[in-house]
Image 1: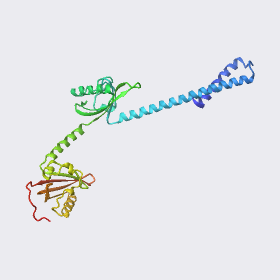
Image 2 (image 1 turned 180 degrees about the vertical axis):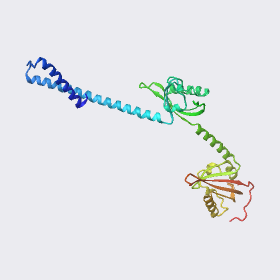
Image 3 (image 1 turned 30 degrees about the vertical axis):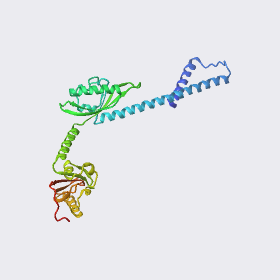
Image 4 (image 1 turned 90 degrees about the horizontal axis):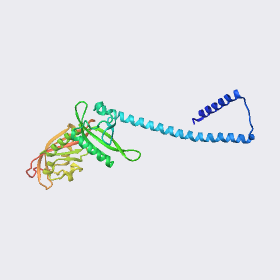
Length: 317
């Protein structure tokens, strides 16, 4: 069962046992059958035992390989969970800890992570009720869910945690608990709120604002653009900015404008423009180039202040 080394060991033990018998008792041969029959019986038994041993050896090798693969897989996944920045945990059907990755030690005390204790005891009360209710629905339906909850950390801070929760089934298919992969999204939510405020301010400014990419394709406009020019967002977004030039200035005017913005970072001046209904108006325009960390222009912004009174341009070229 242990390969050639096992076979050699077995033969050695057999020889030692034979010698231990022959030494005190002497060698005696009783020919109950012919030598041919005796030899066939001996070698047949030997072949049978060797065959059985070979089958058992192969099964043992397969079992050993499976165990090694299982240990390697467990080691690999444990290495991932124990070194991941995200919080990884397993809870039972009632929301009690079964496993918590070491990363939880950064946010919760050891007593709050004791196996069998309530995994959601450090949440705000309203979140505890909501998460426990969601967990019971997940235990019933076997679905996945994404939950956001406010967690009171060991340092007294309140952090916003986003958890992806998956039901866990046993070999019989019964749901026994859930796996949670969580991450701290406090700073992300704060940035989202800042962007919402900036977007609200952008959209409600009285001046026209247009943002284009480096190729001149329109990325965003605000409400004032639609109110003053008459062009809706559906008509402008994704289009080239040059499509909305009224033709009241020569092409070189716009070339010089953007060349100056790329050279010095900005350009300011006045120009005549035309609304969608054909009426003309005078505007003050400012073009700014937005650069990335490599000093490449990635966007341009075009804030404009328009004179709402319709008039005809003078000195038009």
